[in-house]
Structure formats: structure tokens, C-alpha cells
Image (cartoon, rainbow, N blue to C red; front, side):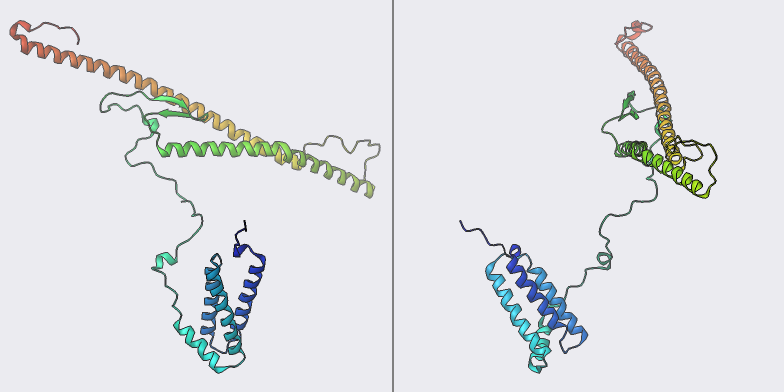
Length: 311
């Protein structure tokens, strides 16, 4: 079976097209016409080649290449000073369709690519109360006790399902921030700390060599060049350890905040349970009162003062 010929993947075809493309642009720059007409011809050549770059039809490719070679001959004759050829170029140029204008100024000023994030913090949903403002003293219907759940080691007071997008966004941001801290800690504790200690050792060796060359080394000092460095001399390692301590403090602070938040959530759950039990008792009493009232109306005077069983 003969393999299918794909023009834009053929090296010979691509070389011939690029040669014709360069020849047309070269002759276009030599046309004895105005700058506006020369730019129009140049733009039309580039647009035509761009539109036909992915064409696979042999018939259409043959027509396009034939027209290209005829145009190259016409442009060459016009650039050589042939007046009839120049007139024909201007005549053909006047028949070309004008480029379409953009629909509106808004579409022309459209920016592509990633849009910048808003600098302000998203506001709370209108009418929503802070989660720590619970428990509510009154709720419509039966009070539902929230549950304390673990969302990737972050405490979450789940009120209802589905989970709001704002809550998911906050949890995701907290997890990404903590992961950045852990990645930075691992990088500092690994290669960065070793390189910093090597730099401090090298600085100590260079300083000692300079002292020996200047003749100011202390007499009787048999300290090895690889001896432990003093704390004041370990400049590079000190900066790395300071960053490690900073990340540790951030992680400890994050853990303390999670513990405190979980404690507040547990307090809210306990208060919600107390209120739920109280409201349940009030509903039972109200239901009993309705039962007594119904029995009084059905039994007449004989049913007055009789306490019926709880329904």
C-alpha cells in the first residue's frame, strides 16, 4: 500500500514553498509603488501562505503554487521597470478584499493569557454570620447539631452539605501554604545547609591562608583547617538555620491555631447540644399542652383537669 503523501511534512515540498515565499517578499520590497501599496501586497502574500500552510489537497496546492509562480513573474517584471506589469499589480491590488475591522473597541483591547488575581480579599457572603458566632439562640425548625471533622489535619465545623466553595477554597489555600513551608524546610535542611557549611569552611580556609601569607598567624597554633567553626564565623550556615527556625515557628503557630480553633468548635458543639435538648423539651411540653387542650375540647367538663399521657 502506497503511503499517503502529506505536503506539509514533505521536506522537498517545504523547501520549494519557502523558496517561493522568500522570492515573493523579495520582489515585493522592490516594487515601484507607494509604501501603502507595498505593505498591502506584502500582507496579502503572508496571509495567503498562512491560510494554505495546512492544505492537503493536491489539486488546491497545485493551483496555489501555479498562482504563486505567476505572481512572482509579475512582481519581478514590475520591479524591473515594466510599466504594464506595475499597472496590472495596482489593478489586482484594488480588487483584493479589504481586511475586516474588529467589531468593537472592547474586543480590540482584550488581553489574552492568565488574568491577574484580584488584590482584595473576597468578602463574606451577604448576610452570613461568622462561624465562631454560633450557637444561634433561635433557629427555624429543628436545631441540627454540627459535627467536627478533620479536613486534611485542619478542624472544620460541618453545618450542612454540600460544602460551600468558600470553605473548600480556604482549606485548599491552607494546605498549599503548609506544603510550601514543608518543601522549603526540606530544601534548607538538605542541600542548602550542606552547601552553606561548605561555604563557611571554605571562607575559614581562605582567611587562614591569608593570615599565613601575611605572617600574622598565631604562634603555636596547630588548629586543623577542618576544625569546627565558631558561631560568629558560620555566616552562611547561620542564615540557613535562621530560616529553618522561622519555618519551625510558623509550623508551631499553625498547630497552635488549629488546636485553639478545634477547642472553640468543641465548645460550640457542646452549647448546640444544650440548646437542642432544651428546645426538644420545649417542643414536648408544647405538644403535651396541645394534647390537653384537645382532650378538654372533646371531653367537655369531665375532661377538665385530667392529665393525659404524653403522645
